[in-house]
Length: 337
Image 1 (cartoon, helix red, strand yellow):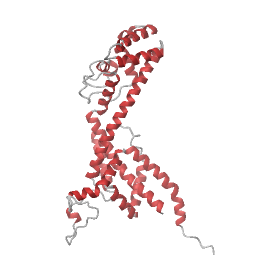
Image 2 (tube, helix red, strand yellow):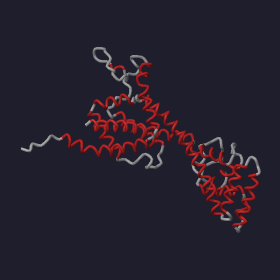
Image 3 (cartoon, one colour):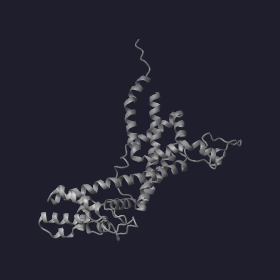
Image 4 (cartoon, helix red, strand yellow):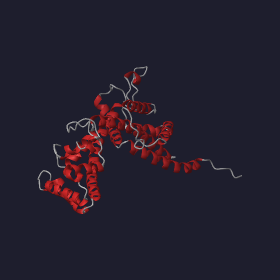
C-alpha cells in the first residue's frame, strides 16, 4: 500500500503541474505571437548567418526576394517582427540566396557556366571583409559539389538548416524564461504551494483517488504538442479559463481565502495552511512559509505541458503494472477447511 500511495501522490502532483503548464503554455504562445518572437529570432539568425547586423545588405535582399517576400505581409522592416515570416523553407532560402548573389545564373542554360558564375560571385564576397563570412562558405559548398547545381542547393540548404538549429535554441531559451515567469505568477496568484499540496495528498486518501481519476481522464487526451491546430485568441482564453476552473475544482488547498473564510464563529482564526489574503500574520511570514513551495511549482511549470503529459503517462503505466499485485496481497486468506 505504501508504494501505491506514493504513486498516487506523484500522479496527483504531476496532474496539477500539467494543468498549470497547459495554462502557462497557452499564455506563452499568445505572448510570443503578439511580440512576433519567431519572426524576430529568424531575422536574428539570418543576420548572423549572412553577417549583416543592420539587415541592409544580403538579409534585406533575401527578404525582398519573391520566394520569401510572399511569406509575409507588408514591407520588410527589421525593426518590426510582427509582419515577418516565422519560417523560411530551406529551398526558398537557397534559391533566393543564389539569385541574390549571382542574378545572372538564372538566365544561363549550361549548368557548368551557372556554377562558374556563382563561384565568381562568391569569390567577390569572400574578398570583401564585410561579406567574407558568406563568400567563403559558399565557395566551399560550390567546390564540394563540383558542377552539380542540385548539390550546391542542397549544400546551402544544409548550411541554412544548421543556422536554424541555433535559432531554435534561442527560441526555446526565450520560451523557457517566459514560462518560468508565468510559473511564478501562477504559483503566487493561485497560491499553489507544492509542499502543502503534497502534505494534503499524503494525508487524504479520498483526495488522492479523485485526482488519480481526473488524471486518468486527462491522460487519454492527445499530448499538448500533438494537436497542432491553430487557435483564435478567444479560443485560447477559453482554454485558459477552462484549465483554471479545473484546477480550482480539484479540492486541493490552493488559492487564497478571504478573512471571513478563515474566521470561525468565536472569532478565532482557522488557517493552518496560511492561505488568508490579506495575511493575518503578516506578508513576510506568508512569503517565508510558501516560498519554496511556490518556487518548486514555478520551476515545474517552466518545464512545459508536453513534459508533464509524458511524465503522467509513464507514472500511469508503472501504477497499472503494480496495482494488481498489491490488490492480491490485500485479499484475506481463504479458509481451506
